[in-house]
Image (cartoon, rainbow, N blue to C red; front, side, top):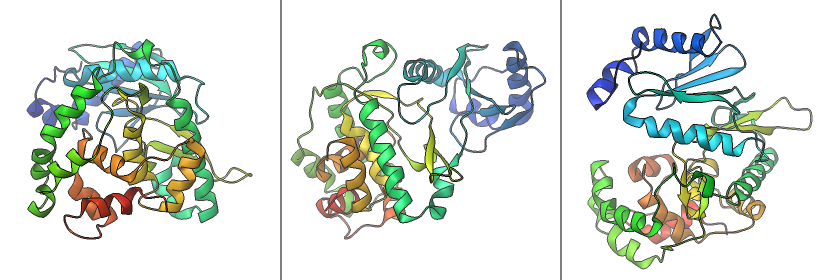
Length: 310
């Protein structure tokens, strides 16, 4: 019941349209033994995702990103019960129709940390970022071989070279000023990044928006979920700290220091800014609007401002 989606135009016409999506999601839920359970579409996220009753979440992937659906199903199955922060448990994942894939997973308790952050005290924030650091340490220690057939990029060195060649044009496309753009090539050339790092399983978008928290726990707020593993990769563990610095600690050196202490390693700010520029979803003008910049075009100072721990 879901039509084929192979182009951006088809995506724009079909994926946001609930008159098309909902019947297909309902039919799939019924096929999975959940017929009659109420469906509620989550407003956020790049893919169509539905709460199915109180206990399940159904995530759909059109043909254009079917590989992401395969990856997320495999990664979540690999992670089940292995991280100190809960991750969704896979109930079933597979193909649907017209190239669509799906992942049916458990629904995690708690509320989005991004929405709850202002109601968390400074001391409680320290505890929460400690939990993030501990979870990342475990995530990055896991064997990646069982996922090597579904997660890229494969050759990390080639990925770094490719992304370096694309960095300026990607930021120009986002409207970054020339004062910043002209400094990117020299900055990237000055930062040594490993071409064959110890392979780590990367979430790649560790951010408050992908964490759940229970504010009502009698022992104080605790994290109850880490989700959205569709863009997972295998590569240099420092790459995961781009999202951490930008969207979890958000330029707070004390919080980043606390998180890194729990993780067991502190990364050079220059390395993390370099990976920020190379990140697949890098959008430097957005980050500058969100976090501010000390001086236009000054990338070394920007690195310290966003990723310093002193």
